[in-house]
Amino acid sequence: MKQVTQTKPLEILQTIMEFELAGVVRYTYYSLVVTGSDKENIVNFLKEQANESLTHAQLVGEFLASLDGSPKIGIAPIPEIDDFSAKNILAASLANEKQALELYKLLLESAKDVNVAIEEFARNMIEEEGSHHLEIEEMIRNAN
Ligand SMILES: [Fe+2]
Image (tube, rainbow, N blue to C red):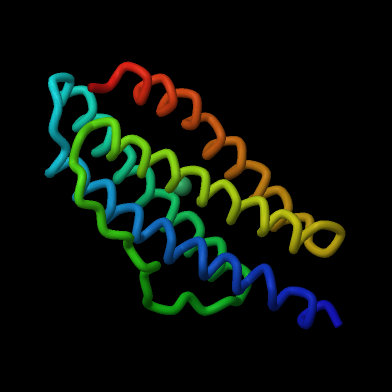
């Protein structure tokens, strides 16, 4: 019975790992192509986000493995962009962060009253992911 109920959180963890790995590629690419006058700060921010995505992908993958799940190789689809202005790239970054947050919330929902360890993991990640939104929104307001 317990194994059946755990299938879904494991699937979501796999999806999140693939999403975070896509984040590594997205943010690295964004840091290379972004334009604008405050470029240096934004490039640094995007590189930090790429690193954070990698850390998260590793954390999620390790957690998935610790639950006897078997992480599969894969990466989420990466949307194309054709406007490389700081404002547009930051908007795409914000969308990425919001999507990540939604996935961790989905994970939390799937584990509620089923698995305390997954619940706790999801709560911690939600706290980490949630903290970036205000920062990016502020950067979008200041970008040109
Ligand atoms: Fe993340």
